[in-house]
Image (cartoon, rainbow, N blue to C red; front, side, top):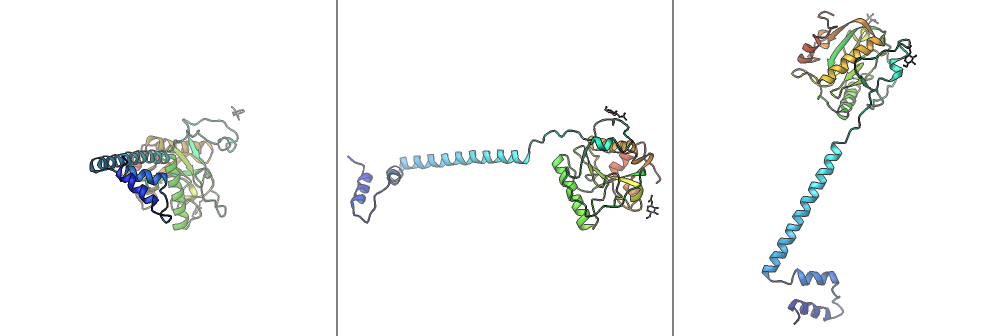
Length: 268
Ligand SMILES: *[C@@H]1O[C@H](CO)[C@@H](O)[C@H](O)[C@H]1NC(C)=O
Ligand SMILES: *[C@@H]1O[C@H](CO)[C@@H](O)[C@H](O)[C@H]1NC(C)=O
């Protein structure tokens, strides 16, 4: 004997031209979802709820996994570059090697805003190197450091009204040096000393913590390179920013570290 619900919808289909026929899908739904009495219906409902929950969880896991992959991209190993033309040439083609690899991120690599006009030339070799910190978040990955350098440049241009990022160089917790105004342009980093110094700024805030070793190393190598290129005097004096301006920069802990470096000088 036919199921009562079957008969009911067959009746319905016969009822007249105004009642269209059920499609196969609708028939299926009527038969298997609306058909049954409480026990089976509850089981079907429970199974449906369970299945959707499992699907939802699986989807969430997939999305999270994908998101994670987006936010933690695999950074390809960046080959160390002291661009050969920088190392050679300006020292009359003298060959030399640095103690260790210095990796310099060029302006176009950190997506610097271009200069509207050339800035005043720095007379080199300079007698001073002045170390500051950016008083921003620290950065440990290339992408984070690029973002910081970009942000500092924008801040110096938009808020301070300078023509470019103030520092000659920056060093990041990623171990890279970042070219700011470079060796040959007067910076805006230490009032009264800009035209006689190279300003190197540590990305981060170092009142209570020391920069990572690779960040310290990058600064040391950068100074070594500056001397070898003839941009920094061989008997240069190394100063903390706070020695020439009323500032906490480069932060107490970093300042204490600087005092152990051979060229640090108590008096400007
Ligand atoms: C520097 O090194 C390169 C490659 O090792 C060599 O061809 C060149 O002659 C050297 N230049 C000087 C000035 O020593
Ligand atoms: C640096 O600037 C000061 C003040 O503007 C000036 O007196 C001094 O001669 C300049 N030094 C150099 C090396 O240009």
